[in-house]
Length: 344
Image (cartoon, rainbow, N blue to C red; front, side, top):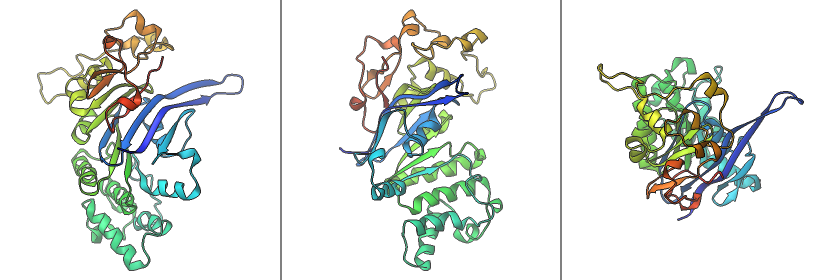
């Protein structure tokens, strides 16, 4: 099978401060993944704020360049693409962002975000064909054209605005959609509708989706595979059923245990792992970044960062608790599963 979108050893550092007091922050470290052309899938990238999720999305979209590593689309590095190849990439890899209002120009009707890409990529040869294409995309995401088109952004609900953005991606007939927190600013009652729209894109149109979220509940409902990030590093990856129902990495266990249960007798957050002020300041530089919060910490955890160990055929975890198991390389992980190589 051939890979549609690949990432190998992605690392992104940001430099802040003045000339004399510069500080480097590693937002993402040694990330890898592969999405197959022949097998549409939905992959979730989960983690708390600051874990590197949005940085990953910007890298994969070609908005910023990695400090190390490379991104390939159909076997060609993004940095080596010709103008025509870059144009194909920009049409076939689309994004849906978090804020369903910020992406709109309030002076234009919502039709503008739909007609602009059609015109730019010459997808229709007449106004009638453009209208038909747009209306078809709007209906595909569960909206009625007569109730949506011709209105200004403020006249639509947050859920409607977000579904219009899904329709905007859909008119371009993409092969991959990167959805960065697409339901985090939408009412809970509308999240299911938007998630169902994304599922339909995979089932009916064969579009792969990279779903970036901090919400493990929606990740579980939507995704086939999941990778969990902590401070820029992959800590666990595999089939979503295994990772959510039987988490192996202590950080994944913390995330899963923090999900509130619909039981008034259960104490929410009873198993949470907390940090002292001293631990927050003394974050390890060489070892596992989760070491100071981990109840299973060993001396080795402070000395070196663990590689990704293959716990079973469908899951890996970067934790020294599983050092008796074989370490895995990025190209040996499951098809369409994000992976991380050894950081030693």
